[in-house]
Image (cartoon, rainbow, N blue to C red):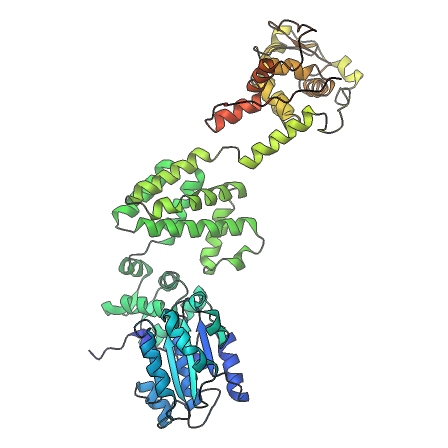
Amino acid sequence: MSYLVFARKYRPRSFADVTAQGHVTQTLRNALSSGRLAHAILFAGPRGTGKTTIARILARAVNCERGPAPDPCNRCRSCLDLLAGRGTDVYEIDGASNNNVEQIRELRENLKYLPVHSRYKIYIIDEVHMLSASAFNALLKTLEEPPAHVLFFFATTEAHKIPATILSRCQRFDLRRIPIALLVERLDAVCRAEGVEIDPQGLEAIAREADGSLRDALSLLDQVLAGGESALPAEQVLETLGLVDRRRIHELLSACLEGDAPRFLSVLEDLHERGHDLKKLYAEMLGTLRDLWVLRSSRQGARLVDCPDSEVKALEALAARFPEPTVENALETFFREEPSVRLSSQPRLAVEMVFFRWLRSRDWLSIDGLIHQLERLRASLEGQGGAPADPSAGDPPAAAIGCRQAEPAAAQTAAGLEAWPEVVRRVAGELPSLGAALKRARLVSATAERIDIDPGGNDFLRQSLSRDKPLAVLRRICAEVFGGVPEIRLVGKSPAPEDPARPRADRRARVQETMNHPLIAEAMELFNGRLIDVAVKPEEDA
């Protein structure tokens, strides 16, 4: 067939036509102008970004009859021969299929012969990292001191696999991934040249699918236009390439972050029925979650997200609906579970399980948060949690107390039962350990004069309120909530007084005290754990 695919038809013919690699092309043009071109050059970078194309343009510029020139004329005999693929002095070698030492030895034998028509004999070795170790070793001396009429141009997508001894003998140029905006611009120029029109959202979908590769983008465009239509909407582009509409990804993440299980499962079911690859869908969700987190946590997030302006605005609106910890927790969960989806034989079930794990962990206390609370508890128990609060700091003025109308005790108790959760919340904000103990206690009665609390058999609350600071904090907050200057009383059966002769280091009592600690109980319930052992540090005699 005589049809020429877009990736070949629209291959750049000059340095100016190369997309997004100005840092490389400008350096090479300057080297050609000043006569400082190296004898061995390595082009490294992702696929489809122009490595071999730049090597070919450089070969034409070196051997151009008007050169060496910053740009090939593409009209002389040498340039036309190379454009047609019949140049006798430029050899393109596939490193993957010519990778053994015998072929490199044959190459070395041919180096001593002068070029037939051109100024230089040029060897372009693509995927050079595929050469064997012995082939690289055979090339070392020749690469360091080649004949004056020989140039080497290498291209690779995996520069880390090339031995350091080879890298040290080359000038290395790293090519960049092509941003989506530049890919869309290039695709639009090709569409205009072909006389077709594609919806901008369709071009953005092609550019995103190309993942920074211009060759992939042109191949996808070729596939879309194979139907022969002159105008294509975005929906048809997505249908032809089997891509997921970005709005569906946003809808899926919105349901996920909201914890809306029915909507999440419904959208996932619809995408599954349409035949979309759920492993690829999960990867897109993970990438979009990353973009949401960057936009939510950074003031310059739009600059760090490779998306069209229209999608950046949609992502910003979505990110603004959720607090940063929620987005961060979702990203951490989905990233941690990525191998379970990628390696699963049932990706749909794997994605659903990841969602339900995230749903179950939304309100969990993080390890860092738990450690922080335990540290605050330790500091408070050791008397290092801050200066003791003034018991009278929060007491209302006497005049205000005198003007307060008396209320029936039953009505005050009923109102106190309703206000008690507020007291517990405020206490937990200042003393987390005391707040946790109060959550497990029972309020018996509450008036402006007296607060009766039943500890419920947990001796930790009794021990806490026996110290000045916790008692002062609870009394102040109760005074602010209930009014007056209430007396704090603990009712219910209290444990028998401890025998003074009993040693303070009684291990069983201290183990039981540790097991009854509210934060320890919460930690065991949170992590579904069990207490295996308690190490008791004996106290020294006074």
